[in-house]
Image (cartoon, rainbow, N blue to C red; front, top):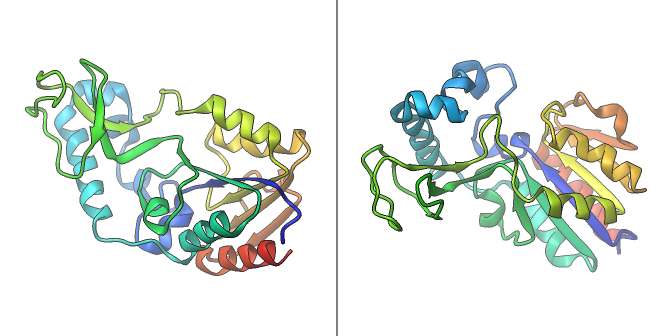
Length: 234
């Protein structure tokens, strides 16, 4: 079995791309088609909440048409079969890790299938469309419901828990990330400073490739299952 006892895995949009969900920063990705300032900032939501709702309603509907791929399934298997600790920290807001069976999971950028009210700050699971007229199930006020997504300019979730996990990790794996979005892009340096072995699994070298001890490049559905096999085999 693997000699590593505390594994932290960072996943990004490249992991879900082969399931049919668009990446963000690649050519033709989401931010090539939409201005993030209009649909993914608190200011954009204040200016035009209907446009923001339309954007996330579309993404929520798209999510219903896809399924976990072999890379998601391999990570779930690693969690189930590894004798040590495995924590997945995902930048993805989709639910494909959960659908594959992963349970030790942090959504640092929020979740597409959750919403919360800006009036009472209460949240809940949500699978349907959002509108500006919708009343909050908790406080009854209208106009305050928003996607439970960490937008540009907002603090990612559970950074204290992530930081502690990185300090204790003996293996850090980054999968399907561009390496240029902070604070996630700095996780490899934190893990390496704590003595962890660092591995990049990506379609192509990321901007942070030089920080990794080891890198394997190719489609996630091929290289992630292969790497998990090698970890479990020791």
